[in-house]
Length: 262
Image 1 (tube, rainbow, N blue to C red):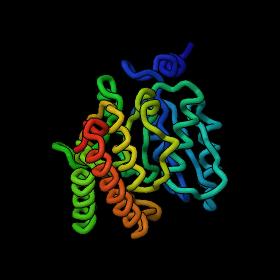
Image 2 (cartoon, helix red, strand yellow):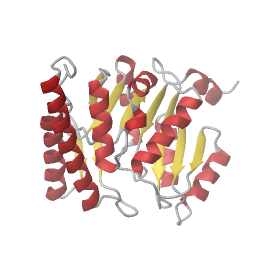
Image 3 (cartoon, rainbow, N blue to C red):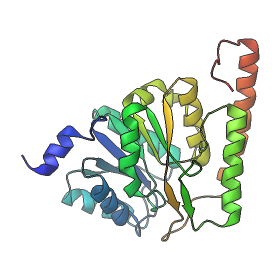
Image 4 (cartoon, rainbow, N blue to C red):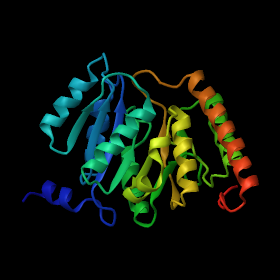
């Protein structure tokens, strides 16, 4: 048995078999680069490209990568349904195939695959690891001041409104162990974009999932167009406010129901 096969059998030490889910929509300029970096940084993990029928041919490029590497897989989805839906489909794909942990990672290179080993190491003693932009030791590169302030303010608001004890509730570079995915009510998740990450943070916290943050280096994309929009930001603010009010009402009715809030 070769070295690659041995690594696939063993997985990441202390964590097990790991699947990195990379959602894509029109990421033809990035998908081959990001997959290559993941495979170099963490040879033991498998990769799933979840493509939303990209008109720029991203799915076909991913098929070529999968044909050349048995640790790369492609999930072709019928159309653009949003980041949250793509991750939920990736989670289901991983659970059906017995993976022990699932990683969320953007396709645009903003999440450095070179940080992945540190996140996986942290998952040995936690069920959910957030690659944080706002904890000590993290770096954010090439962001204008407006984006920095928006992200910091949004995360502060999420923490105050929901009582989630993390500095980067909107961060999308994460490791979920199987126990965390089992504990979170994934069937209830409806949000997308920033709101999706906040919702999973909230649900994980309420379920008692062991969460830790690991500092990462976050860089603005160099190729392709950002999927961020005012609508995504508005959705996040509306949902965070709604969840916060709902949790407060529930805590007022039953103080024991939300012992972890705030």
